[in-house]
Length: 240
Image (cartoon, rainbow, N blue to C red; front, side, top):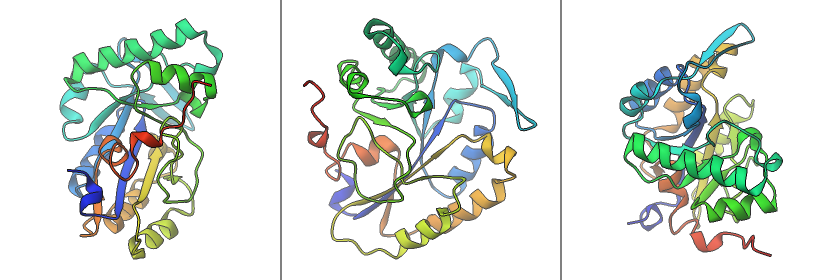
């Protein structure tokens, strides 16, 4: 059964990189009954990948921590090594995506159909090849501040990023909507940004605001996007 059989609104989250801050993020999401898609780079889990940004230590989690943490949520591909696909040859791109898919499927025991573009970079060639790699939907990073379902399943633009000032206004607008056709609120980001911006309390207020509405379907990106509301038939033909 598709969510559009019973709902006209859906909410999903998409977070990248599989870092330790995801532990706190998942605790908050589970508390409020929200679901997320976590976009992972299978080639950057071991050895530890650690870096500093704005005084915050960021470290990717090892595989043995991820499988339990992300239970009840979705895992999607983000390439093996977080490379800009527009700069790769066809063969390199194919390897980065298919090897990541296969590694994540083995680790998590679930089919990997989703993708998030590293750096948000894509083009017509990349989308065509991504389709050949078995990817059903792919998220970019350009905010729309819109709730319209995507027309191109291989270049899905999110509603907004969590650190944008408009986030609460968009939430209020979405909650009050009584639409006649399916609408989607898709939020994205990196959980380590909450440490940089002291944004955990703000994010939890947002989750509390969004959660628990009887007329909103709460799902992963795959559950929300691969449905009657945004049929795969909407996928743009990238073969020409």
